[in-house]
Amino acid sequence: MYRVVITHLKNKIILAYLNDDLAVELQLYSDQVYPVGTIFMGHVARIQKNIDATFVDIAPGKTGFLPGTSHKNGSLILVQLVKEGTSQKAPKLTDSLSVSGRYAVVYQKNGPVKASSKMNTDTKNTLINAVKDQLKDIENAVVLRTNAGMADPADIACEILCLQETLQHIMKTKDHRPKSVLYSPGTEWEKALMGFYTDKLDEIVTDDPSIYAAVEKIFPEKVREKEKITIRLYADPLLKLSKLYSLEKHLSDATNKRVWLKCGGFLMIEQTEALVSIDVNTGKTAKIRDKEDTFLAVNLEAAEEIARQLRLRNLSGIIMIDFINMHDAGNDSALLAALKGALKADPVKTEVHGFTSLGLVEMTRMKGRKTLYEQAGTVSDDEALSGDEGTI
Image (tube, rainbow, N blue to C red):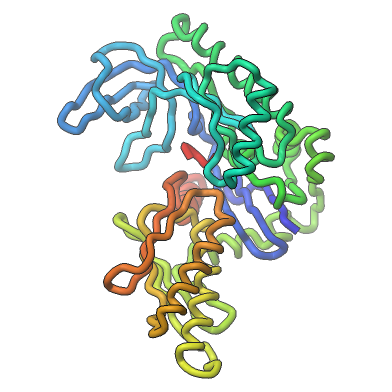
């Protein structure tokens, strides 16, 4: 059973996507005053041509980074938050505005209706034509999210029109609300939940009535019946929801550098500023028939686990994998095919580039939210103190 569990863990909200007892995805969220997707009427504070950057004041004490230098110093401009800031980097902004729903992203600019690259070509073309038939005339650029592949074109069109009206309202009111928030997309966990593939989602469970109410709005009764999803409000004073589904253990395992494989081998996952390195080791693996067969078996299991760990830990950027060296070129090809196949379930765009001259497998994964390690580190820090473009 595919289940999403949403509850409080320490002073955060944890969203856990579980396949029976196996953690597929873990995300930690704090109460963000300005979540990713917020649209501001900002004030251009300074322009730095040497780094092709414009810095925009978006709220008291909060300045964001906008690529490019086409705006004038001191002017008021519409900007949208696209990436959280860190202790070293300012929040990243864009002046290309968009609003998102469960099925679509609608942009302020003009353009065609496109679909997520995760859809196959036939599904994509059929869906785009069906949505166009429903909409008749629409000038805004639209990207259909992967979830749209399972939805009724009429429902998708209805959502697109609502999102279009939201953008129109923003543009009508912008001149009357200088230096203010013009649009907030809702909490980060709600946005994440809207992006889940419902073909692999059977149940959503929480122990918080306010979270339960928000989930009901995201998945109204009509949608739940059609997509066969149940939502449940858990209430057992003797056993916390986080304990029932071992969320703290899942979190601990997912922030450990060593990951054991069923065969007895293990992975060592190291993250640096430049890249993520993953080393595959035979460990306690029992010999199968000969070394080549043993190495292939370990590598194939490692490929499946690496795909899961990348999504689970939200690792991104350049990823270098040191599989166990094999002598048969056919085995190398089988390994790359297995890795690519395992990565297909990942909603975040990934690309396997193949073996380097040093025998390492190089791949990339699109950057989004902070890594789970960073999120989990924030939990510890807060506890001490307080006592794809997301995926489409």
